[in-house]
Image (cartoon, one colour):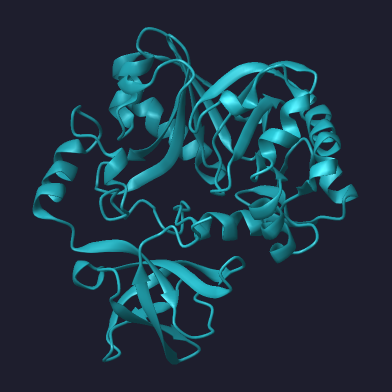
Amino acid sequence: MKTTALNGTHKALGAKMVEFAGYEMPVSYEGVKAEHDTVRKAVGVFDVSHMGEFWIEGPKALDLIQKVTSNDASKLTIGKAQYSCLPNEVGGIVDDLIVYRVKEETYLLVVNASNIEKDWNHISKYNKDIGAEMRNISDGYSLLAIQGPKAVEAMQSLSSIDLSDIKFYNFVVGDFAGIEHVIISATGYTGSGGFEIYCKNPEVKQVWDKVLEAGADFGIKPIGLAARDTLRLEMGYCLYGNDIDDTTSPLEAGLGWITKFTKDFVNSEALAKQKEAGVSRKLVGFEMKEKAIPRHGYDITDAQGNKIGRVTSGTMSPSLEKGIGLGYVPTAYSKEGEEIFVTIRKKSVPAVIVRPPFYKG
């Protein structure tokens, strides 16, 4: 099992550790609800150094990114980031990712930990004909997510850059926590604002310690992967392997907004046809009408008990105190307000289709 550079630090803090995407990671420190509330109301810090990072460089860098990603990376200027996905050849998704334009001909791709090797191989396959320079730097870099409404205020003392100036999905390369040339990115997976900090492995302990020190007066706490999951689900953000995978199309998953047919990309012709014809199923959000928790893999049925889909992600929302979930259903059942049923312990429990985000802030 791989470990992040902060593995010993998490254990010293009493974190409950679990295997996740091949890494030993902190799932919680003091409990999911407390950690979730800390991020929604104040500020928390996550170690998400298991994520993968690739440099794509040189005069052919943009050509390669345009070919393998669904979004239009030509719109990126230096200092901007973009959410995108890697479509496969059969209508599904290899992975979802963030593309950063760091310099004129230098891009950083940030991919999911469980897909590092798969993504690298997929992109490399298309690069044979294109010839961009590719480097997998995943094992040498760490990533901290500092998230919550107090993140800017709590972290400002650590940088000479005006953090409030960094708009959503923008980033700067600058000083942070006594380290030069850190990527400070106004991105995250929680819906409560904040930053993601990219630095080298030998630097991350200093950054982590200074972040906790600077945030002490603002109630900062370390946050585990369990709260990361409840936070992202309240926003309706997709989790690869649950809500999107090799068999789900970006259009079915509600990711049409990152699927741009103004350019040619992997499987774009087939996806364009699918868009024209309309999808037969859709990823929807739903709230339980009774006190019940939907879980990944549970059946979704109609009023007559016929199976029409399955839950891809589900939890008891700490902010809303009700069961929420995502799942694929036939398009006919995807309208807001439509009643569906989730099979929980052999019982059909009613739910209603709602448009994410579940948590409105």
